[in-house]
Length: 290
Image (cartoon, rainbow, N blue to C red; front, side):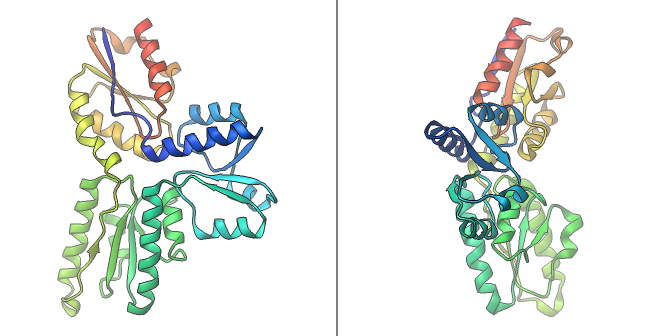
């Protein structure tokens, strides 16, 4: 049986950068706080805990004083930086550069909208850490849409700037923005008002979809390794499954079932942008022993 790890799988560059920052800092000190899970992968979180990383939520963060806290790649809203300043907390900012740029764009647009009575719409997953950080740039006034059911949240009499969470699907984003444009066109009172679409999806993440499709087609069976709470992982898993029904999603090698491999000649292993490379290697080693 041939076992192949997807060469494009694993951490995106934003996560790689944050993990490297965390490891470098933990070499200097015995412990380091991180606001939220550094990545949506329990096994990577557990690995960093053993190195001295302490993961805290926002309520715990508010109680801290005179210490150092790492900001993960998803980014944070302005409120977090205000609390840090007030409580003398030194922030080590590991925000992904792509997310950081998007935050700046949304904040700038929000300031312009104060004069034009415009609105900001963000296509993304509600309550996702990145989206919370993005809406924070608008004093939480931005409208979040996740699908067609949310389109009625938009005021079609006002100008709109549409942005996307960096890890969203390009095809889904294009589909939803076309529907928004049609609704504006039907609004006869404001025929000159058109939505402005800002394609802010990270290409390193989005370009994985077509490559993953080809990878999934090449193998009899696909093992997709991802944390249970990774939205990117769920999306990419569904991409694999759509072209290869013999696709199984696991979060650790312990979840592998030997019966999956009966009559299988080739196995492909892939993972989310939040899946560490060492975990993909571990999964490969277990399959080879089978």
